[in-house]
Length: 151
Image (cartoon, rainbow, N blue to C red):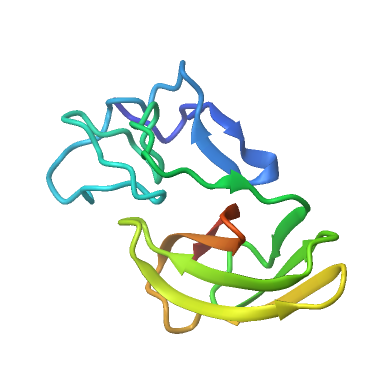
């Protein structure tokens, strides 16, 4: 099937949610050869992997993080060089900021002290190969994440 002119039926692409709806034509339409064993969230791919960064209906992990409050956005997406990330939240304290690749491997992690409502981060993506990534914030067993594309 040619997917170039097909709507992948993302959950909410305009807000950065590139997970697949249950009626997406990308579900079980991928190939195993050359595909990562895990999706961008670290969920195992099944025998018929989905096309894209996320495996739909992936088995949930025994340990799940609650959703972190606030608004987490990336500007300059897609990017070839630099992007800015902002998190607007009342939450204060130690926050872990990390970048994951499609296999779910952490390729960058930084610990930050959030002292005000707005956290702004500038990140150089120059060293990353072209592809899809996920930027995450973790604070006290709560997580928020957003996908971005490096061109």
